[in-house]
Amino acid sequence: MKKLVILGAGESGAGTAVLGLKQGYDVFVSDMGPIKPQYKQLMDTYHVPYEENGHTEARILDATEVVKSPGIPATAPLVQKLTALGTPILSEIEFAARYSRAQFVCITGSNGKTTTTSLIYDIFCRAGYNVGLAGNIGKSLALQVALDDKQWYVVELSSFQLDNMYRFRAHIAVLMNITPDHLDRYDFCFQNYVDAKMRITRNQQPDDAFIYWQGDPVIMKEIGKLNSAKQEAHRDGAVCQATLCPFTVETPLPVPDAELSLKGVHNRLNATAATLAARKAGIDDSVIAVSLRTFAGVEHRLQFVCEKNGIRFINDSKATNVNSCFYALGAMTTPTVLILGGKDKGNDYSEIDDLVRQKCHTLVYMGLHNEKLHEHFDCMTRLDGTPLRIIDTNNLADCVRLSYQAALDFDNSPKAGELPEGLKGHSTVLLSPCCASFDLFRSYEDRGDQFMSAAKSL
Image (cartoon, rainbow, N blue to C red; front, side, top):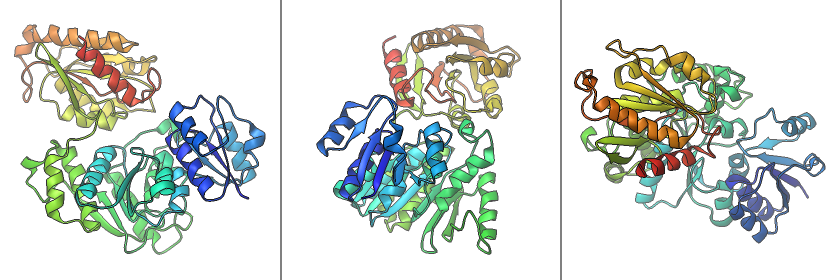
């Protein structure tokens, strides 16, 4: 009997354990930390052996195959030992897809993938398709395949998940953009990160579709490589043969831009990608149009929280990289207090410099290590030549309280009547951190939830 070892007992790990048992594997699950009660309950129900708060190497290194959590890097000592032994290490998506006959719609990109994924899923549901939502959002793909396999899956894929996918085939692949992110995981080499994102095209066939934003220079460079590669071996033989489906901000939609429920240029691109994916799956424009008009968006992405004395609070905690913050600032039409900080991933903050000068009067740092933010922003001036106000915090309660006070101070100052063109009204407090959340929070969701609770409690 083949032995399947699963490293990490979260949503993907526990689901993989159930599928592995159903497929006849000898399964063992190991987690370096504590396992959440709901995943223990699931594994207990199916009599899955597991351990928590540490790894027993002897029970892991004899595995036939290993499925690891995307959060575990290839540099982890135990992963390196498995690699040295030649043990195949897979992602949950790779493993689960072996046992499903579904069609896969897969979405990746540095920004916009969660909104696009959620919108595509909304369209498929509205069209009456038998569809599951999986990957970075939704339920474990492996568990869905084990218990109630679907005809379609809409799957959000991170670069970490793509790293350990080899034979998986995306029937419809969507690539939103590629901007620097997670460079700390990729030896601070942008091309390594690019290569991970482009793995979404692996194994695609001529009747598959590769949908991508034509306005991204990084993607277009890689498209050139793909076209050349069709004449020779490329990416260890897994050549993309899919039909190329580029889109731009001018690509026609089934509804006028004014009727889109999600506003802004970035959301126009998200809607376009979702529309093309749905069309490729055979869904009529009349169904797509309803979703484009009514889709409410996703939590923690430019989410309105509350208003206090005219000060609006916006939760954009999902902005874990600089490019996401760029889009958030671009959507601001009021003077802004911008909250930045967290676990830096090799960020280059210069991308948002012009928007910070134009729209922000205060920057509030929230993290355990704010040195890089101080170095980059502290000497910056606004468009009128006045210095930015800088506030340093290392906890959320102080951050929200001081951000609110800074907004009130500005709105009551003479400067409030001298706003740059395009800005008006009371200040907005925008949480758009540019950074991962793991220095102070369990996740970006935890960060956003705490921010919303603190703002409502003022």
